[in-house]
Image (cartoon, rainbow, N blue to C red; front, side):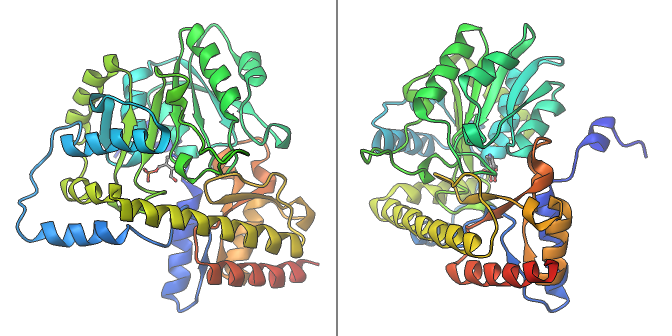
Length: 391
Ligand SMILES: Cc1ncc(COP(=O)(O)O)c(C=O)c1O
């Protein structure tokens, strides 16, 4: 069988490859501490699980419209009002099968072969795979600790060319948990818009961002740039990774294209997930998610202290999400060797920086602190033992 060049060219998502290897070790009877995936251990809020049980018995679960259940689109628009004081027309909300499908539809809707798109390095690998899959020429813009591993306006301007058609930014970022400051992001988007370029802003971790110095929550880019295309998800803040539910907020003119693409690509997001997700927006569920966010703060402190104690350096502490990006140069191992040996010898699963870009990927490792405190403590203790064997 002839496999397409596209499929042959796509690199494996190492975070998941290490997950597969962790599962093999577990099947062989080992207890593995899994810090490789960005998957909150809490699961869906209790009200969402009860709702799924309630509707499971006697609801036929037909397809919904391709843009999603109207009630869910309204609830998501209401969430922007409640969390950001932003009035949003629900018609602009497209419910998708995870943020991943939102990215699929947006790249299909916006990218033509040969278009150049700017993306920061490091960044979440799948986003750029969608771009390449639709023929974009992805221009990775190197970043470092000085810009908190994020794009700034100067870097965007410096890498812009006559062929640049858009940019994609995730803030807070995966793998670093660091954000583009809101004013800087607004400046980048305004500048790109002035060049006639589209902006896809991946806000999947926005509701897991630290508040600013005055206690105000991190704003959505939609407040400063209503014409940006925004992506979000039920996976992270609501802890619903396996439910495969997310959304995009797009300009009015893009909605019909998104609808046609969704109709053809996957018809609709899963109906049971959409119905049960309505229970995410009750005061109890939102209070539960806020409490979990506080817990992530405590886990972050525990991890940063633990890594410092064992001599592993985190060049930039995160301000959101649940990742730390560790510089492993002091160990003498490159990122792949570090992760392979940590898994084999200490049974701790991590993700090599190679997943996230070419600049610095070889000497960084991502640790996800979406695991329980007990697992984080155990994982760091095991890493301490592993590091001793290197010395
Ligand atoms: C930055 C970023 N965007 C998108 C996704 C995809 O998320 P989903 O589970 O909603 O498809 C992830 C998943 O980890 C992510 O980190």
